[in-house]
Length: 282
Ligand SMILES: NC(=O)c1ccc[n+]([C@@H]2O[C@H](COP(=O)([O-])OP(=O)(O)OC[C@H]3O[C@@H](n4cnc5c(N)ncnc54)[C@H](OP(=O)(O)O)[C@@H]3O)[C@@H](O)[C@H]2O)c1
Image (cartoon, rainbow, N blue to C red; front, side):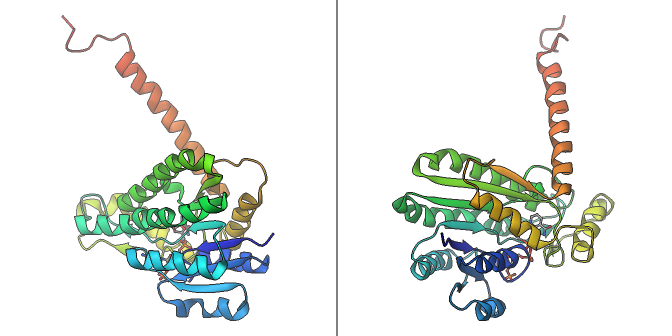
């Protein structure tokens, strides 16, 4: 079966690797970038199967036009991959209202818009798969990435809700949580306009680690991410809603689960334990 994909953010990194994998598999793929010139190599390689579409996620009219163009060129959309994204570096106190809004517009509002636009098309065909690319940051935190972490947590919360709401319509939802992958993510990380010396030390490791990702030979390859995504899309039976991608992602998230269990136990002891509360203590 030839699948029809709409994949955002294909100028580089994970989206580009996914576009290559889909085209190689003989599928039809609508691929987006803010500047479609960055897609010309892919289009030249597979002119019959790869359709370039301009898309800035923060532009509502362009989101509408992108879905209309993709559905028209492909004759329907089987899989939407909300992959495009970029990070903002800055401690919570440093980041301005405008910077937070901008980050959430890219990580949450834009993908949400695309989902709203593709759902009627998927519902009409009685099937569809929405894949939202989150991050381990969708379930954990990194000091200096509060706005990005908030965006990925929001994307995951929305996805969990959506999955329940659309299950009876034949529409599947998957959240991918990559660990570190060698892409442009680290180099295109924007920095907040306000930097405070109080936060230099606590955020230094995050900044150095993120900036160094592209040159780190020990982290994941985008081709492997694309292969795992394919496994999930092709799977016949039910698949987990949230899927960590990469050994580092499993290590991070297992540590998070453990810490959450300990926190819950400590909270229960505090709120339901035997020690008298100050209000009732003699
Ligand atoms: N690499 C990792 O280690 C890692 C880990 C966890 C999660 N992720 C997530 O994986 C996804 C893909 O990132 P990547 O690692 O492949 O990074 P990347 O190489 O920088 O690719 C990001 C893509 O998103 C596009 N994009 C960014 N902001 C956009 C906007 N406002 N509107 C439309 N397109 C936009 C970029 O397009 P332009 O060319 O126009 O900038 C580019 O095509 C992101 O959601 C990221 O948060 C990555």
